[in-house]
Image (cartoon, rainbow, N blue to C red):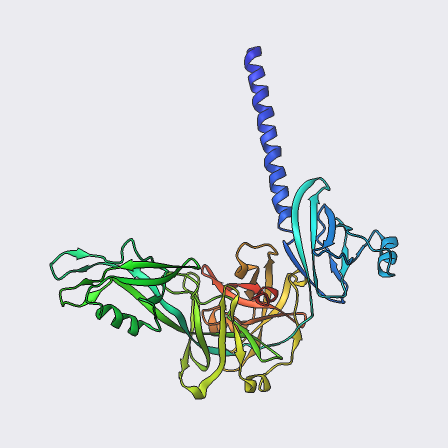
Length: 441
């Protein structure tokens, strides 16, 4: 090997080493990034311990004009502990070091922010700290029938048809999009699908002004209906104005509120979260179970009578974190379980837990294991991964199946979250949402 070749080879090795070190540092950085969530909640008046054990430190301060210090303690700073908890001198910010155990305490509901740096130097993240009142919720596990009516009518598809002159036309093409909500037609509120179809058919082909909601923005568009071979006026769209199904109640509040599903109700064709005008909960009875298997999710089959005698609640919100509303007082009075405290996400541990569901007719506890906890998952509905270990539940359902969404997850006597999805390739496993995420709606 010549001297020139040797120099090139050395440069190559140095470049390779530097790339390897850069990749390692990036990997370490992003692994640490997942350790501390961007949002942390703590209970007012309760000292809470954080044992993240990552080389991250920074300042915590109140987000307000007037500064009220939050108490902080680390395992290695007992003098600071005594000064702060004894009502020491007010400070605009307090230093925290998550390389050690940190304890935080704030006496009142408030909001704070932590500006953190990795190794005390590299920018890490800004963490929002919310001080909340502790909550007691009644874990449910009851099967529920769901009916929701959309706000306007939802466009679920754009199509073509043959006109009265034998041409293939699509009046809605380039005007409407899948996922649009039609709210008004020529200034008149669109109440339901049947009414809107009648408006189009009676248009006589005249231009129509539609008020639509698209990506949460409201705008007007003009569209000209076309006549089909039967001389009927059409737009060439498929629309929907309601959705039905079954799920599981997660919790009931002592104030008659409820939360269920752990995920929103999305349209089956567009996968878009449905805009809710009104919704109703009904009593339902599980009449069949299709067991889940790897690659083939199972499901619960329920029987629902959509009449006023079976109404048990009103749905007022359909969000990414679940459905929420007001439930019947009789439901609270007949609850199978007593209220329990909630578990904040940093309190959830890997290991034994339970879920509550009604696959055998009544709400029962079934054993599961929490196998993953992701404090910073990009999908709010997948922060927890559980595995069913209860032999009875495995025999009945094969694990997690459709219709069990919303089943409460209980750990150490606290309501930790709710089941949201099954892992398609392993029916014994499922995802869950942190209960604190459901309470942010």
